[in-house]
Length: 102
Image (cartoon, rainbow, N blue to C red; front, side, top):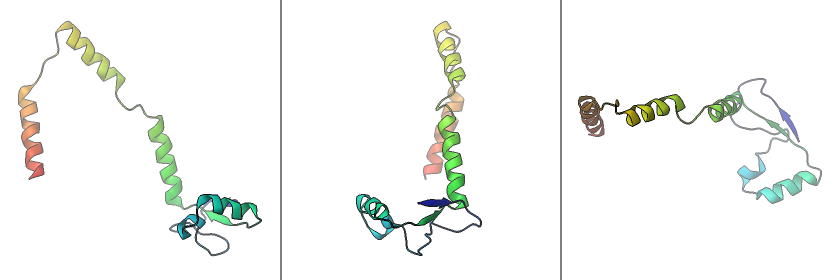
């Protein structure tokens, strides 16, 4: 199977035979791969949007899921007793959240 990168911004996938992708037609993946092995060759064109989504996915996968430095500083503040809770800020945010739900 040949994969072509986008020359223009198409929407969706297209094949050189003009058919929709096998999975879009409801063919089981096992049957689709068997058809490819039987000598059918097709070309898949990946859109610019799909490439951008792949790039975003890679970037997000490389990012940490939390701020380790912030967690460590909060742990330290809790252990030495210097962590303070701003109750006014918490109350304002709760009220704002409740208003957004209404």
